[in-house]
Structures are given as C-alpha cells and as structure tokens.
Length: 319
Ligand SMILES: C[S@@+](CC[C@H](N)C(=O)[O-])C[C@H]1O[C@@H](n2cnc3c(N)ncnc32)[C@H](O)[C@@H]1O
Image (cartoon, rainbow, N blue to C red; front, side):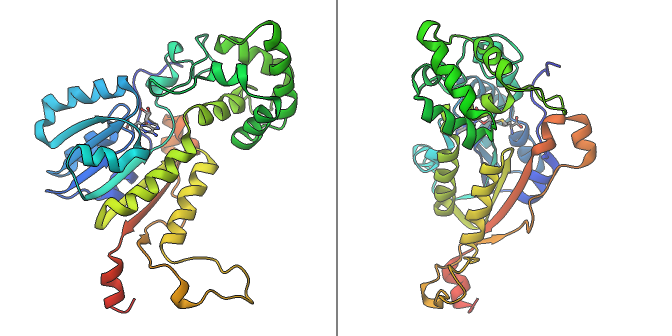
C-alpha cells in the first residue's frame, strides 16, 4: 500500500528519551517528513536544527519555518558532517541529537527515486544529489565486490549466484531500472515462506552501500560525542542489525564498558578511556505491538539512547 507521507516510528519513545527542555537546542539529523522535529518543538519551547541530505526533505523543512520561525533551522547535508554543519550554523554545543536511520516513506514510495522493487523506476537509490547511483554500482562492481555487498549488508544466502548473474547479464544488457534488477534476483532466489520479496535483501544491501550508510553512522557518533553538552542526549532508531550494532558498541565503549581482551590480560584502570556517555537503554527498545500493527515498517526498529556526561566532572566526584 502506498503511504501518503511518513509515519514517524517510535515517536513517543524518541521524545521520552530525548526529554526536550525549554531554551535548549536539539538536532534532528534525519528530518525526513519532520515528524520527530515537530514533536520536539511541540513538547518544549526549544530550538531544533533539522538536517537531511535529501533536497526534497529540505524543502519540507523550509515550510516549518513559517510555523516555528526562529525556533527551527533546516540544513542540507549529511549527518556524518554534523560538526561542519553546526559550524556553518554557528552553533557550538547541542543538548540532544536524534537519528531515525534509513529511508522515509516519501523516498521509498516514489518510483523516480529507484529505492523500491515494488515499482519500476530508474535504478538510483541515492538519498542526496551526489555520489554513485545503484545503476553505476551494479554495472561496474566486480563479481567479488557484489557478492561481498549482498552477503554483508543484505545477509543474502544467494549472494554468489546473484553477483555472477548480474555480471553476466550486464555485458549485453546493462541495468537501467529497478525492474531489471528485481526480475534477475527473483529468478535466482526462491520465495521465502514469510512472503518477503526475494529482492528485498539485495535492494537493502545496495542502498546501504550507495549511501555510505554505515560510515555516516560512525562519523556522526564521533561528532555527537564532541558536540553534545553535558547531560545532552543521543537517541538513535535503527532498522538493520549492523546499524544497531554500531550504536550499541559505541555506547558500551563510551560508557566505560570495554570488554577485556582476555581475562588473563586485564586492562589496567589507567589505560581505560574516560567514560563520556551513560547508557539510558540497557537493552534496545522495541516498538509496541500496537505500533507494529498500525505501521508494519516499524517492526524492525530498535531504539538506543545515551546521555553525554562531563568526564572531568565525574572524575572529580570520583566516579
Ligand atoms: C526514516 S526517515 C526520517 C523520518 C523522520 N524521523 C520523520 O519523522 O519524518 C530518514 C531520513 O533521513 C535522511 N537521511 C538518511 N541518511 C542520512 C544522512 N547520512 N545524512 C542526512 N540525512 C540522512 C533521509 O534522506 C530521510 O529523509
């Protein structure tokens, strides 16, 4: 079913963990349709900086200005470049950042963007205006690269088979459309019992690589550590285990929970890095059954949150 607009996923939980306060400044690093930004602006008399790499989302953000005036600012760019974007907006510290990873319904439901195997369209999948498209990738990557991409980012059992067929076919007929690619995959991958389209995993894998999605997460986590004020919140909603794993590992490490390499070589206290975050979610928070029922897209969502702590202050207190 084509959705009109985008239903924000785990909205109540996001607001609860971000805990917006009047007079503070928050970043919505994945503005999309502005569902999170609006909820934050309505919750407290605060300021929100919206970031999105998609010019269509940036246009939607401009409309927010009419309603929220100086309390809202929209920036076009990648959240991985958080520091440069904040410098550009002349903002030093922020009191919270929220990320809702992946694509919006606006993007996936628009055939012209080439994200979905459900509609025919140009094989593009770029969230922004620049970089290589899915078509470039599929028509130029080696068989080993394609196999690696499909296996690593799509967990595709038939990665080798699909990669070989892509490389064979493109010699005579380069890939142009989403249907070109989906039909090749559907011929090679058996239908699963759960009704999942056989092209799902491969499309997801290619999208992750086209948009450099995992590097973006690594970059924004490092930047958030630098730019969050003491007590500032980091809230991330992921839809893929690799994304969630990066956030989990970051929060674990930055909260001082560094696993020892071996119990025979304990890390000496003085070698342990200072803790810069407190983990607010012991386990990843999942959407409620009621939310999954009304918005099936939320089913794989996992929320993790942390609070920036002032390392020097906690040291003084002897923590
Ligand atoms: C799932 S949607 C966000 C929806 C939003 N929370 C809402 O309630 O409407 C993800 C958005 O993040 C954007 N995005 C994804 N990765 C990005 C990145 N690295 N930098 C900036 N924007 C990104 C996408 O273009 C998309 O608009």
